[in-house]
Every structure is written in C-alpha cells, then in structure tokens.
Amino acid sequence: MNKPTIGLLLGAGLGVLDGCTAFFYPDTKGMMTGIIIGSTFKGLVAGLLIGFFARKVHNMAAGIAFGVLLSGLFALGVAMMQGNHYAAIIVPGSVVGLIVGFATQKYPHATA
Image (cartoon, rainbow, N blue to C red):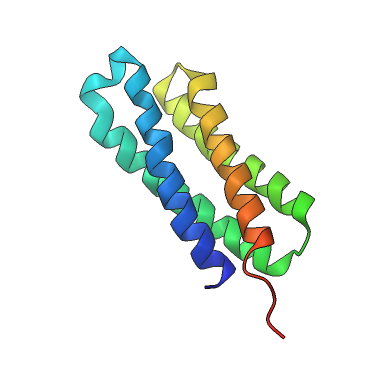
C-alpha cells in the first residue's frame, strides 16, 4: 500500500472517530450525522494530502509538522463556520494530522 492510500484510509477512519467526539457535547445532538460526515471528509482530504507530502518529503519531523498544520487549518475552518468550541474542534483535528503524518512517514518501508 502506498503513502497516499495509507493517509486516505487512516484519515477517514480517524475522521470518523474525531466526529464521534461531538457526542460529548449535548448541544450537537441534532447535528451528529453532518458532523461525522464532515469530519470524515476532512480526514479523507487531509490524509490524502499528507500522504502525497510523505511521498515527496522523507523526514519524520516535517511529515508530522505538515500533518498537524494542515489538519489544524482544516479544523480551524470548521470551527470558524461553527463559531464556537474552537479548542474542542481544533485539538482533535490536529491530533488526527499528527497520527496520519507519523504513519505516512513511517509506513510503508521502501522496498529493495
């Protein structure tokens, strides 16, 4: 499996989990479907971009930094549309980027 595919799959999976964290806020009860779909899409796009970055740049620190920055910016955009809960949206989104950035730099190993 190549790096963009790993980023895509991991970003989508973690995006679902990121969206599910909204269950902890009672005022999001009627919006859960949209939150989970939006978070999954955000994870898909960010994961794909992080995977393409990892294909070109082979540096763990740069990959993690790019993942956190990109996912944090996507989450900031969502938080600005929401108008509140900035930390509750940006922190989990940035953690998704951190994990995807790490995973796409570490796996798969180059084949001989």
